Image (cartoon, rainbow, N blue to C red; front, side, top):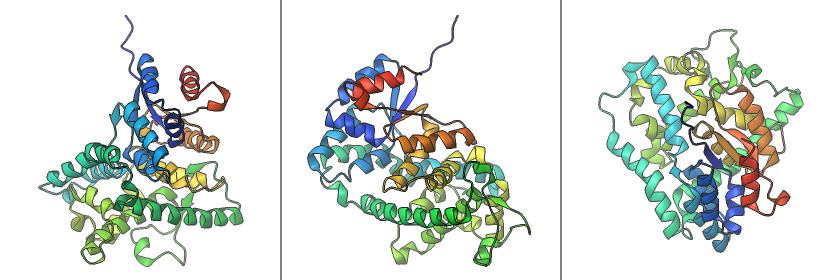
Length: 338
């Protein structure tokens, strides 16, 4: 007897949702997916991006398509990335785990991003462009694009080969802050994703400590801090650094690796304003089996990182509506290649 065939989890890029919205085809898309025995998973970051669309009529149609076509609402990438950090802390430094986790606030945040946020997106999408997360996302997007352009210049001037991500390493230079070098063994070249993740989380936790005065966004610190004693984790910068540089395993933190990898590979191609959102989508690749996109460049990014990812991730497939009678037909043709 054959084993039970598991449903394929399908995730859509925003360009596909936009096509479905334009054609008011959300219900037809869902019928197609279910007829094939598949399920559609959608991250809140996808919906947040749609809510930035400048035209209210187009925005409403896309939101309706997402609501009609989604079977499972994923947790936010901040939540899922933090879960990986917490698991590694529990495995490597259980003394850093809080004796009493803040499950109440954790549940409140999770409910917001998997339920409340979605309901509000339907009821008041016209006001969502002005909410704090949307404004922060817009500012962060421009900042990340500017950083990518600077990094691309460095890569090209140095004629770096970005094809083999495992060979991209980092070592301290004269410009590296002294505190960032603590715990770094002399002469060691460290995988770049490790050093970058170390700096990102040190920044998150620093912001968390000063936010009462600065009112900065504390999302990164909040999710980890719900279960980890951040004071204990940050008590020694040397031990903190060594945790990231030498102790954590990439296969246990694929989302952090994917965030770095997508961002790095993008700098080897044309940089666009959509890159930061594509990096965000990449962190959800472990949550799907197939990721559908109409963007040829992003598909190239997915192909390259999937070949080298430390854990299983969704396979990127291109949908070409122009080559078919419509988006539904194009999606069906693509999914029949599985």
